[in-house]
Structures are given as C-alpha cells and as structure tokens.
Length: 614
Image (cartoon, rainbow, N blue to C red; front, side, top):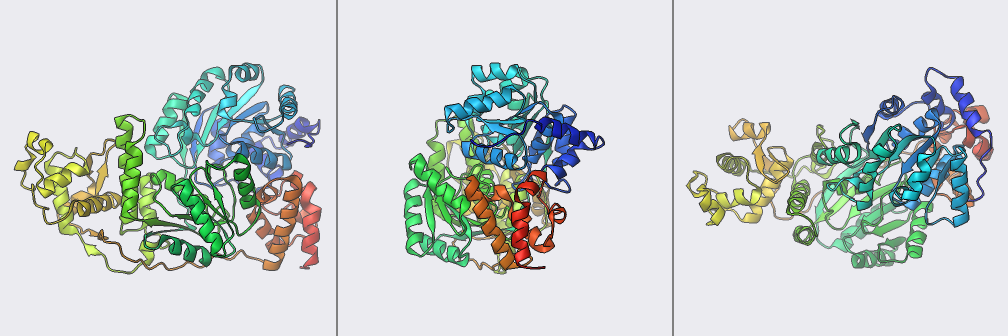
C-alpha cells in the first residue's frame, strides 16, 4: 500500500460535500464518491439503521453490494470506522478500491512491512483515515484495543460474520472474541454482514455478537443468473473436461475434496488443453499467492481448489463453479457457487454426486472433535444437502426454501429443464408419513426406516413401536431407498426436520397423507440427466470496444498491482460501450464512475472510446 497519497484536505472535502446535501447525505456520497445513481435493495435500510445508532445484521447475497452498507455511513458519520475482515488479501483489495475512489482507508496486517504499518497507524491516530481494516486476531489484542479506545470510533463493521457462528460454513474461533466489542465501544453501532446464514446461524450471530440487540435485514438469497445442476458421477475427469471445454476461454472454479485430487485434477485439465491452476493449504504461501493473482488478473483461467480458496474472492467474471465432490452442507454449497456470475451474466453451478460422497462426508463429521449435539446438526444438514442432490423438483426452490424463502419453479436448473418422467411415490410417501405420525413426530429418519422395515432393535422394543400398524409395511424396499425417499420428501417440504433431526409432518405433508395431493420422486438408481444449456447473456454494446476497454483496465491494474475489477467492474465497462461518452461530463454518467476515478481514469478510457468512433 506504499506510495498512495492522501491529500490533507480530504476530511474538509467530505464535509463540504455533505453540507451541500443535508437532506440525504448518504445519496450524495453514493454518487460523488462511488459513482452510483441509486441504492441496491437493502442498502438504504441498512445505512439508515446504522445512522440512527442501531446495530444491523445484514444477510445479503453475493453481488448485492454489502460493502457499501458500511462504507457510505462511514463517510457520512465521520470519525473512524473499524472493519473486521478474515483475510489479508480481501482487506488489501478493499483498501485499494477505496483509495482509487478517493477514500482515506488503511489496513494494518502482518503481510505489510513494519514501517508501512507504523505510517498507517499515524494516519489513523491523527484522524486522516476514515476506514481501518483489521483481522480479528490483530484487532482483539490488548494493545490495539487500548489504542483504539482513545480514538473517535463511530462505527464497527464485521465482514463474513458467519465465521462467528458454530453453525456457519466457516467457523473461526478467533471471531468469538468479537463479542467483546459492544462493551468496549458502546457508542459505536455494529453492522455484521454475510451472504451465508440460515435461520439457526442468524440466531447464533445475533446472540454471540450482539447479545440479541440487533435488527436483522435478510435480503433475497436468489441468484437467478446461476443455472443449478447435479449429475451422477460416472467418468468424473471426462465429465469435468467436457464441461470446462463448453466454457472455453471463460474463468471458472473447480472444487475438490482433497489436496491430492486438486493437484491431479489441475494436471489433467492442463493435459486436456485447459489453462488450470491448483490451490490448497498444503502449498507454500508464495505458490498460493502466485496462482491466486493469476486467476484474479487473467481471463480464461480455471482454478482447481479445495475450500481453502474462496472467501473474499471477488472476481466478477467467474462463469462457473464445478464441484467434483459433495460439499459439506447447503450453506457451504451456496457460499461456494456464489463466486460465479457476480457480473450478472449467465453462469453455471454443476455438481457431481455419488454414493461414496455420502460415506466420506459422514466419516468427516464423525471424526470431528465436537459435541454430540454439533455432530447431530451436521449430519442433519448433510442430509438436507443430499436431499437437494437427489430431488426431482426445482433445485432453486429447495435452496431458497432452506434459507426461508419461497419461489416458483425457476426454469433454469436441470430438474426444470429435464422432461424425463419421474416415479410416482405417493404410496411409499404415505407409509413414511404414517410411521412419522404414529411414532409421535419426534424421531429421525433412521428410526422411522427401522419401523417401516420391521427392524428388531432395542429402541423399537422399548417404545413398543413394533405394535404400530405401520410396522414392517415397507419391508419390500431397501434402507437406502427409504433414505433417499425421505430426503426428497424433506426437500419437497412434505416433512421438516428439527435441530435434532426429528421428523414432523408439514401442512403440505398433511395434504399428501389425506390423499389430497401426490408425490413424485427420482429413484435412487443413478441415471443420466439431460442438461440443456442456457445461452450466455449478451454483454451488450460493441464487443471489440469492450475488449479494448478490458485491455486498458488490465494495464492500469497491473501498474497499480490491484485486481482488474478494482479499477472498474465489467458492468461499468459494458455501460461505457453502451453510452460511448465523448467528454468527462458524459463519462461521469457511467454507472460506477465516482469523482476520484473520473479524475484518474476518465481521459484514458475516453481516448480508447474515441478511437472506435460513435
């Protein structure tokens, strides 16, 4: 971050800007600093709550503009805003982007030379810095907290807030200490942000970080531009290569379960003529950084990685995410596929699924050093994901339902696009519902299946469930078949599972039990699925001009050693090709062009546009 100049009149400039627009200062900051004409859904509500001095938990999908929810209030409120972020690379990118927008931002972290950290702290201590980015480990040291308590801290933002929850997909113990912040800085409202949190995770964040005193804002989880599909694993490497070649020249992420498979898969893609890189925790930091920088700055690169890669990765033009193995749960899956299609263009999330995945994931859970309660929840969440994979209904409906939303069939998943007939499972489903009802709607799938198959277990004997009329009614079907059927019933909202895995009948299930509806399912036996492609969305405007603008952006990014999207997003470049501005006044109308970027980059981009004529 060395070599960046902060003009001494920065704070005066912001105050003058706000004074001219007393009615809605946040809107003026949004336009003049960040170059946007209007707020995205949820942003204004989050900002207004913070400006009123109240805490916010904002759950917003990737690409919804979470960062602006605290960056704009930080400039409106003045003083110092502390931003807690889990990754050094993410902090540095955020700071670089803010500085290019003319905002006084700093980060202090272990990857920066000591003299740079000292200089950054001087700017913070003298009131020049508006946003200070820190990892939780550095923030929560006694020395840092004592120093910050003497400053004018007006706002605290906790990014990737699901890291504080033991039920989230990326729990980090060091985040737990952040619960002290509300006592240390009682005058500063706190905003916690995440794209990944179901209801249990949200409750956990609210309790741990806020002591329950927080207003929760949940924006829609839907990413309609991402096509969802799952296929039975056959020849996995061939399936992957065929998929990647259908997206030739586009960037993508391929997730693998192990480090060994990551390296083998990257090598296989290279042999197949694909520009592929590996990334996993067993590599040296230098190798990981080199590969990540190439992926972030070059087009058409495929990153093959374990889950060590991903958090904070904000590359807009990722065309697809491909899972060669089953993720840990639906939250992790949603988080990982959310790295695709951030530019709004059509993208794909494709997963290969086989019976061995279930066994491997169950072994991982059982091998954890965790409480029995934690393991029960983990197995339940894994079962929900498996139900998603096996389901016959719209996958987007299942995914959104998991996060508490409802939607109609999307028309953009393999199940919606697949016209192959399904099996009528009404009779089998009614047997399941009878077993659930007669046993009291409090037992998990394993016990319900034992009842159906007439198992002679101690648990059944103790509860006299061998006397139920449904006992042994499902002996004609294998245990695995019943497991698949029940998972699909849960996914289709005929059954619901509590936090302990106990099954209960939903309102929809009651209709089915009474014969007022039917249930169709996908049999357990693997079958090939027809995958209809959705045509990629047009980028709009002149494709040659767009390519030239991307080349200019890449040159500027390399000169400043920042990712290309920090200069301008793809959306901004596309807007340039549509508007073809002729002068700085017209260039200022382009979406995403703020005052600082107008000054720094306007002339060079206008020159390129002029070469193509109008």
